[in-house]
Image (cartoon, rainbow, N blue to C red; front, side):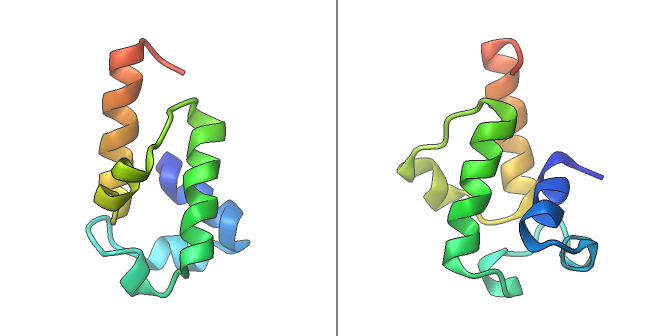
Amino acid sequence: MSTIRTLLVELTGTAEFADSVGDDVDLAASGIDSGDLVRLVLLVEQRTGVEITAEDVEQLRTIADYERFVAERTATTGGA
C-alpha cells in the first residue's frame, strides 16, 4: 500500500475508502471533505518531513499527485 493510501486509512479509520479510490481520481470529488484534505496534508508533512505550501495544495488533487510530490521532494532533499 502506498504511503498516501496508508495515511488515508489512518485518516478515515478504514481501508475501504483508500482501496476504492483510484490513483488518478480527484480526492475531493471522491467524497473526502475539505477538513480531511487539510488533515491529510498535515499527516503527509508529519510522516514524510516534506513541507507542503498553500500553493502546492492547489496542485495536489489525487493520490498520484501526492505520491509524485513526496517522491520528488524526498529525492531533492535526500530523504526524510
